[in-house]
Image 1 (cartoon, rainbow, N blue to C red):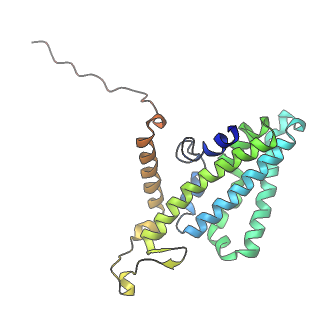
Image 2 (image 1 turned 30 degrees about the vertical axis):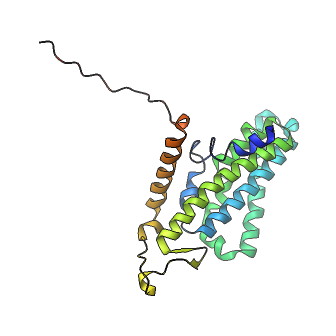
Image 3 (image 1 turned 135 degrees about the vertical axis):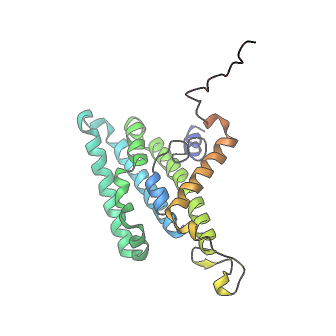
Length: 217
């Protein structure tokens, strides 16, 4: 039961993107197409799980003074392997992902989970926590990537679902969905929707508006 809670909590209740606001660069940059969003999701999740396992496995042997350096080396090594695999077998997607696969090394989500959880927990719970956070991250990327590709082209994963006006159909693609600002808009709407439903995620107001008092007659 504890492992199930660890796995499912990051999906909605503690989502790393919508609640913790981590990993935004890749979430906004690689979601123009669903296939790139899925590829990035799988790459980050694999790196996250394997790095959590490695850090947890040697956690008792890492001196505190160099723990961050060791964690970054582990993550960077895994990212190099993932990047080479993508270039070898998925070259077109690798080109579209550009530098963002390499930037997994500095992704706050990966370093945050290795530092805050894997460094002080056994391998199995650490891997489950990493998998849950990877799935939570992937969920947001898939939602945004699906919306941007569908509304921007009328297609999903390259398959045309709605015939566009250029193809003799009725659907007029929203070109804004293929531009960077659309990712901000969609993510903002998603955060608003989730926090409207789960009101406990809403931050308390830091300042109250001054009260207006009526002048005495």
